[in-house]
Amino acid sequence: MESKRGLHAGILILLLLASSALFAPALAPHDPTRQNLGQDLLTSTQGHPLGTDKLGRDILSRTIYGSRVSLLVGVATVALSLSIGFALGALAGYFGGWLDQLLMRLVDVLLAFPGILLAIAFTAVLGPGLDHVILALCLIGWTGYARLVRGEILALREREFVHAARALGCAPGRVILCHLLPNLLPPLVIQATFGLAAAIVAEGSLSFLGLGVEPPTPSWGSMLNEGRQFLLVAPHLTTYPGLAIMITVIALNLIGDALQDRLNSGR
Amino acid sequence: MKRYFFQRLLLLLPTLLGALTLVFFLIHLVPGDPVEVMLGETASAADKEELRRSLGLDRPLLAQYRSFLTGLLTVDLGRSLSERASVSALIRARFPATFQLTFCAMAVALLLSFSLAAMAARHRASWIDRAALLFSLFGLSLPNFWLGPMLMIVFAIQLGWTPVSGRGGLGHLVLPSLTLGLGMAAILTRILRAGLLQAIREDYVRTARAKGLSESRVWLKHTLRNALLPVITIVSLQFGSLLAGSIITETVFSWPGIGRLTVQAIQARDYPLVQGCVLVIATTYLLVNFLTDIFYRLADPRIHYGK
Image (cartoon, rainbow over all chains, first blue to last red; front, side, top):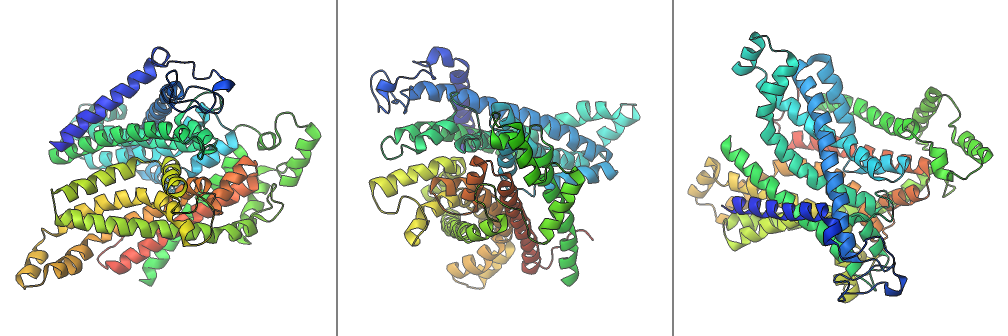
């Protein structure tokens, strides 16, 4: 019951966030990049409910527009990582042999790097930018999906329905896409939900270190980075973008947990 | 046991070599010119050529790779461009601070998670249990680049209970350790609670109770002990996250460790230093995982890997 409530709350929050990202131009009261140096570091006022930053830019508008970057990076990273991870994991699990060994050793090597360390190193070499962030996060992101898909296919490939499909003359690609993929969807959706949360936090971390999107594009992580210098005089610069990240991640974790509970109780 | 140790060591070596090779090629093969990134697009061709020569980037790739591996064997990670010192010496000077922070964060995580999980499992479905699960959800969702500044605003700036930043006495450790350890505490609380709830239903617990053992003895000696094994794995895996997380936490609290050194190296476009820091963090992570496997085997002799 609680898990169901969590799922509904998570979906509702996520829908609100996606709508705010989609309709940002209509919802934001100001241009998020317009500077007004006469109105810098304001706290809550009538024109600026969440205040302004050091360049007089409206925090509410920047937070609304920031959701675009976070969700875009999250969705693009998950889509790309999932596609690569699924393709390589399916090849490794279905065909096995040297291909499986080679791919799994590559996964081991990539997983030798803790957390987002490799993404930090990658963006440090390539320089900041949205596409570099997505590429850097995919560099490790695909490994989790590949391991999951390989493991599930190893368990499924000897089942009767797979043998039957092969006996009917289905090509390996058709067996994987039409017969194995539907069975892999539930765990993949759960992993993608947690992956989306992780990618949003990772984008925030990279932007916080100055390796994410380039100014003046607003992103929650870069807003936090800018606000860090004014922690004593204007803590609101740090509070709101951080709250936005936290709410998004909580929503995704609620959805992921609820789906996981359903999958576990169904198995 | 000795055989097992050497088997694991043999598995570790190719992974370590693969990780080191990946870092090398990451710096040398990604699109874009690291020299141009270091000096900026406006630098003269002569300056770029000079830097390329001093970094050895004008030599064939395989020769560079050979020198890189030879350097690693002699613990020579090259010279830092921004600090004008050897990379190994810089890392050696900063590593104790990172270790101190990481271990304190781990201690915070273990203390919080053990207390919360034990209370939650003991009072299942009560408000304590719900509070522990809520803590776990929030702990997992709070990014440390936000939690750090928030703790700083409340406890250092407004209440004045702790120093704002830097490294010094015990007081300096409180906020960075909390920031770094909270995420791990959240994960451990979930796993330990689930483990305890599973262990309490086992037959040996019923037998222990039937023998007339006190409830605290049943929990400590029989339930907790058996719920500990998965915790060892998670602690080891999370150690890597703590090392990576220290990059952010050290930056937030101006903690003079290897994480902050990495960020400073990135900002200064000091590639030999970035490469050295990444290598040391990845190697430490792999070694900790290796030691955990050995410890795991010692803790539970039933465990076998492979044949």
